[in-house]
Picture 1 (cartoon, rainbow, N blue to C red):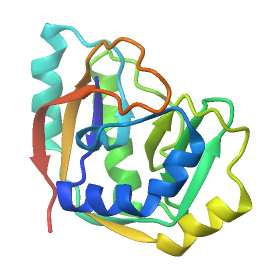
Picture 2: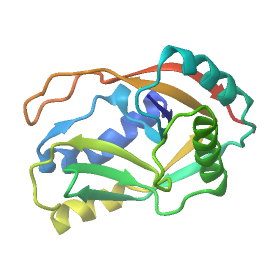
Picture 3: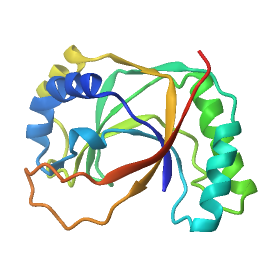
Length: 183
């Protein structure tokens, strides 16, 4: 399970359209549009007992809405993914990610301890060694894309089989609950 930001369909469509040439050039498997998200806090496996308490704690978090500006396309060689990233992390976003991690730790969970690095994964299993300068330049021309954030979600991964390179993965995630942020 994980807490995440989930862009609406119109925003995701704009991103997919802007990144289409880069996604094709990367090989691998493109994520389904409905799965595009920004992880705030990765939790790992969570049992039924802690789940209710986790949802209660998440609902008590008083955080402000914010905007994420996705301004570059990156190829992460070790993970073999292509992602859009935000160079600047808004203080309200960082505070939300930290509050969720604290709440999880207080409930005895072991969230990921790395600092929050906002990104949206577009391709898994990328087959290129790096994105060419031309492909990266084309992506930069289509970015930045500002994502308004007014809600956060608790989501769960679903086990999937391996899809062939070039395919769009079937839906991989489901949302379990969501909470609004203050305007």
